[in-house]
Image (cartoon, rainbow, N blue to C red; front, side, top):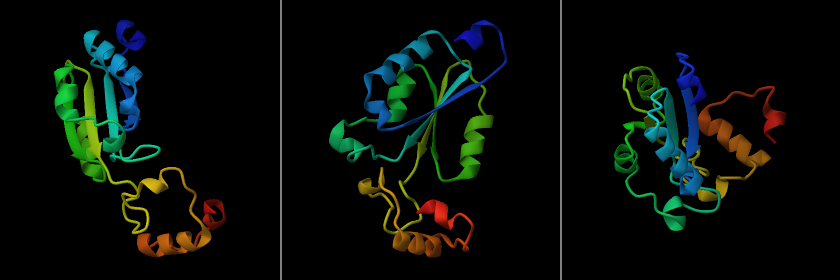
Length: 150
């Protein structure tokens, strides 16, 4: 808000997870941003449908995020969060006099058979055997980072 009202030509980007959207403070901020016409703000939602302890739908259903944000007065785009082209396009090809939200649909742990869409990996450390499997599945060469990952 300060950037906008001081007349600076700056953009503000906020990344939130869909689990965070289950908190009331997020919705208070979303309404305030739209009310004040903060068109210099873009919210990027990592919509992987998993939060800290379970799938979001089992904790609190978020309903239709596109319709919800649109009804608040946002310019809304929904993209494949794994497509770098769609991410870039969503962030640079937007001209709107509204605040913006990009719903980036993602899959937790995409590309790893034992992690993909598995809620148990939200806050779990990979072990040595799993790291070996991950490197094969992701086609990662041996690297100096091997010791850092364990």
